[in-house]
Image (cartoon, rainbow, N blue to C red; front, side, top):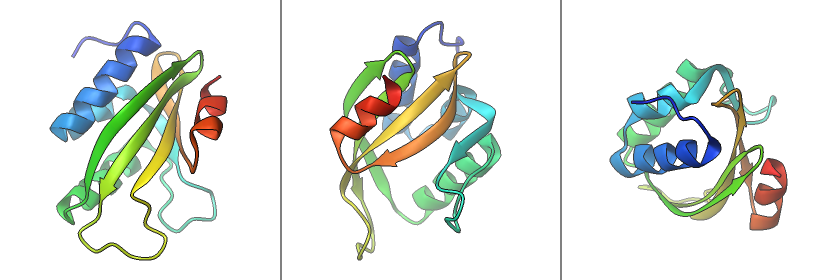
Length: 124
């Protein structure tokens, strides 16, 4: 994969990685110390390896995620995810936003948002 030169290219690669379930491609878009999740969450990720391992586990459990909207901002990419859980339960959203905060061409943090406004604000 060619290294993304701008946020628009990174957004395209993110969409491709999700569509193909390509964790190797996604890993190339993440900074080594990429963060995902609140500090007090038991499944927080604090490195590229943590993020990829968590996504690999979720895919292995049968979780399906589809990017249904992409918004590009000066500080990153916000996506609307539609998630199909094999065992839907309380607290498991079906449609939610994530913001991918970018610095030096790589994703440094992934944040979850319940609405579009807050996701777009995170990347603006």
